[in-house]
Each structure stands twice: as C-alpha cells, then as structure tokens.
Image (cartoon, rainbow, N blue to C red):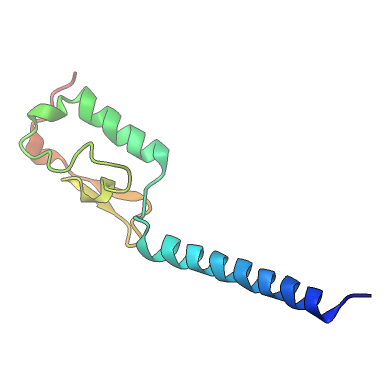
Length: 97
C-alpha cells in the first residue's frame, strides 16, 4: 500500500528528472557546435600536415578546435555541418610532405 505523500515525492522526483533531461537536450541541440566525424577531422589534419599546410596561401581556421572544421578555408560541409562534402584547395600550391 502506498501513501499519498510517498507517491507525491516519487512524482516530484520523476518530474525533476524529466525536466533536467529536457534542459540537457535543449542545450545540447541548440548550442552544441555541430561536428564532423572524428575520422573526417583526422583525414583533414593529415592532409594539412602532409601537404605543408603551414605554407598554404589560405589556411584560415585550419587546425581549430573540434566543431570548427566546416569553417576551415576550402572545406564545405553539408547543411547540418556533420560531414564534409567538398574540399577545394586548388589555390594553395599544395606540396607533398
């Protein structure tokens, strides 16, 4: 047999838990930067280092923090900014490393 007071506490705890989860989902989806898969980021960084990226004509934003890859010069991502769809580094005089 449950008591009304205990049921009220359990309901309050559940409401609080749901509220916290909702806030986390809201913040996570609204303010977390989109990020490409780690394998794509690592491939871009390898490309940078293996083609003397420090000497490119335009290496703006390259090697920035995770979630910034879609702002790197020459990189185009999909609308959701979750995958690279184009790499255009033709004006950078890439040099094999």
